Length: 375
Image (cartoon, rainbow, N blue to C red; front, side, top):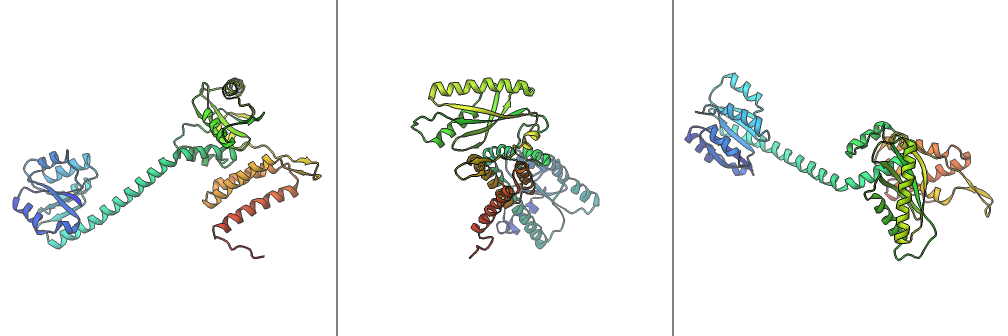
C-alpha cells in the first residue's frame, strides 16, 4: 500500500475523498488528512508519505506553496493538485514544481480512479527498478573484492592493453590509481629447498599471499598469479619513486620479509624481479617473448611446462572474455599472444593457436552451444 495524505480546507471534501473511493483496491492507504498545507508540512517532517493530494486554495499555506516545499524538500513524494480554478497560471506553476497531475473540480469518480491507477503503475515500476538496482548494488559490493583481484590479474595477463578500457575498469572499481603515472614492479616468488610441511602446498601459497597482502612498510602488494611453485605479484610503492630507487627499496623490503619467513617458519623462498614500470599502461602492455628449450629425451624443442601452464591460464581468461562479450579485453589478449609468440617458429605458433581454438570449441561444446563431433 502506498501512503496518501489529503489536504483540503473543506471537511466535506476531505470526507468525500476518503469515503467515496475504494482506496484499498487502488493500492493506497489514507494515513492523514489536513485542512491546511502548514499542518501537512509538519506531518511530512516525521512520517513516510508517498503521495499528497491537495487543494489549491487554503488559508496559510496553499496547495502550490505546499507543492513547492515538497519539490524542494521531499522530491520522492508525488503531488496531485485538485482545484476549481481554471487559471492557466496555476497549472503552469504546478508543472514547475513537478506536480504529477492537475485535476479540476468538480472531479469525476472515474477520472480520479484513472489518475491513481496510472500513478500506481508508475510507483510499482519505480519500486521494482529500485529493488533491482539495490540487488545489483548489493551483489556488486559482495563481489567487489574478487573484481579488484581479477583486475590485477587481467592487468598482468594482458587483457587491459587498451588504455580506455583500463581507465574504465579503474573508475568502475573506484581504485585510487592513475594509469598514466603509477610506479610499480612485477616480481615472482618461488619456493625452493622443499621441506616437510604439515600443511598442503596450496595452503602455503595462500598463506604467503596473505602475508604480502598485509600492511608492509614501503610497498602495497597484489598477487596476480599463483601456481604450485610460487606467486607472481605487483608491488606499488607507498610514495613516488623513480625506477632505480624503486628497485633498491623493493629489494631491501623483499629480503626482509623473506628472511622473516625463513627464520619463523623455516620456509625457503627466493624472488625474481621481472621488470619495473612508470605507469600501469606500461605494465598492461608488457610481455616477455616465449622461448623454446631443447628436450634431449625427445630430441625436439618445447615450452617449459611452467610457461605452458601460464599460457593456458591466459587462454582461460581469453575464453571467459569471449563468452562474456568483452571485445576490448579479447582483442588485448590476442595482441598479447602475438607479442609472446613473435620469436617462436611458425609451426609452433600454429600449434599454440590450435590449442587455443580447441579450448574455445570444447568450452562451447560443453555449454551445448555447438554440436559435438561424432567422428
